[in-house]
Image (cartoon, rainbow, N blue to C red; front, side, top):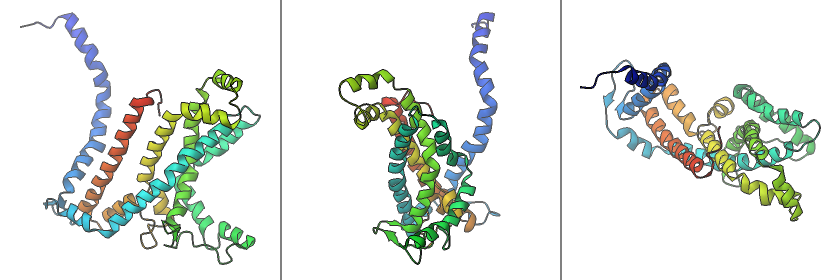
Length: 309
């Protein structure tokens, strides 16, 4: 039997020390994240309407209920529309802003701060402010009336009518807040990528005749592809989990036209006290976000390993 020599003890100590430092955080993470996640997974196969009684095992009944739930499919459709409506804007517009504020002009730091300010504003404050703007007698409708475009105003948050027959007005109004809040954040990510491109690359391109707007098409966009992919995945995950904007501005209405999957989960858990059913919705949401997260890892491995967010 091998004896524990001082040399072996030093080796073991060096190996164990990092994990001992990590142990408190791992225990806290396990108690606050992993354990509740496992419990929620178990509850999705039970009936737990009465919290005073232990959950009753019902197998796949909650999943069958979910399959037949028209409101759930409506919220899933709204979440998909949110992805389609928000992500392309948050991929393209921040890049244009980043190119703009990357210019070496006097006072450009003030513009950067102005574009980034919405990011640090609380979503509660932003939601209330935008709700006032969208009000029947709010600033936005008053401006439209003054121009004579819509004398009666637009019911931004109270109409289930759809724009071009696709996106409800109420949902599009909430999307605008998400875009406004996210522009500055993704602009900073792109700005970091732009500043990593050597200036001599643009100088060489100018000699070859690629200058002005064409240099961005020939150089900037190809070199920014890892950042474009990363922003696309991150913004998609954020759009899938949107909740605060909906809760503050529309409460999912009218007629569930702005209700997203996360808000429906909240409504079932805390409004209807359908804990098990809410856990089933949460499991579906987890699978969607897991797929997007795996996509992000794949993108990082294929070309974005040098990007750290």
